[in-house]
Amino acid sequence: MKRIYLDHNATTPVDPEVLEAMLPFYKESFGNASSVHEFGRTARMGVEDAREIVYKFLGTHDSQEIVFTSGGTESDNLAVKGVAHALKSKGNHIITSSIEHHAVFNPCKFLEGEGFKVTYLPVDEFGVVDLNALKDAVTDKTILVSIMMANNEVGTIEPIEEISKIVKSKGIVFHTDAVQGVGKIPVNVDKLGVDLLSLSGHKIYGPKGIGALYIRRGVKLTPILQGGHHERKRRPGTENVPGIVGLGKAVELVGKNLKKEPEKLKRLRDRLHYGIEKTIKFTKLNGHPTKRLPNTLNISFEYLEGESILLNLDMEGVAASTGSACTSGSLETSHVLISMHVDTAIAQGSIRFSLGKENTEEEIDYVIKVLPPIIERLRKMSPLYHGKQGVN
Ligand SMILES: *Cc1c(COP(=O)(O)O)cnc(C)c1O
Image 1 (cartoon, rainbow, N blue to C red):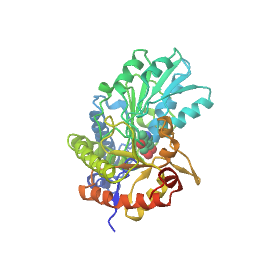
Image 2 (cartoon, rainbow, N blue to C red):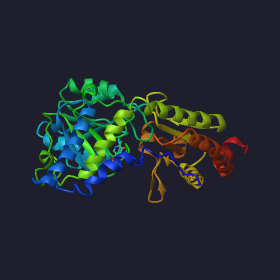
Image 3 (tube, rainbow, N blue to C red):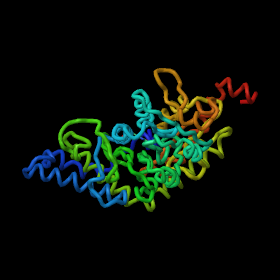
């Protein structure tokens, strides 16, 4: 059976060029990047070449502003907890949004337990952060604002430049989780006006377990780990050299493809959306209609549960995901959709299709062909549907 992967916001396949670039650092160039001998120097060169690719991609000139981490989650933790701990003598207030990834949300919750105060900004029906609420939330105790660049579930792109103007005019440190933005929309730290920015390897056709945090020069940060002098003590631990090299290659490739790849993704994504709307009744797009990642389509099929659609799609060889994560057997509705005031019943029927560079028109057409009979079959069995419609 044909297998079609439409879950790229969860993870992406490693690009063969990335794997190729990594292999020597598992084999002959296995040295510890801190060692002074030839083995170590070769590994160090791999790390620093990757660092150069990453900082140039982000539009900076300063290699010291990039710290390699174990992924997006660690980058977010280091940014949020690192800044909070470093600046706690200045204030104890943090502002974030109500639709952040758990990698930002839960560190904020953790900090609340330590006595920090956190404001979770509301979003509108499209998932855009309320700028007036941000202005109102800022106090002289605010030390950090963390707002994601683009949402992983619905793809809505946040107005980071406008947020930065508000935040920086008050001299507050500004972090953005750009894990979903990188490779899909332009990311330039100066243009965005951010002080810290997180990115992850496996969302951009790089390996899992590697990421980076951009830290603007002068921004104070208390490390999470204590150990050796690696990454200027901001992230001790022997460098994951093959991972770092892979991340560098992945960033290089998405940078090269940023001109045409997002266009292609958007065309395919819209083809899928149009095909679904044309053939299936009672659907609702979740997320901003235009200010949205070019690869992301989060759509609700009313009167149904996302999980059963997913399972049926999987049986047809199509991999997607739900907006609502299934936690320990109980259906927990997505905090993102709840924050967007999507009706709970409609939120339960949401499916996220997230496209990637290996997807083709034929694959999209296959999904458009297999999906309507699945929806029809499930709705026939749905008491909700019968109750509301009284017909098939
Ligand atoms: C995937 C993701 C993360 C976590 O990155 P990992 O590398 O998987 O730890 C953080 N933020 C967003 C928006 C993501 O999509």
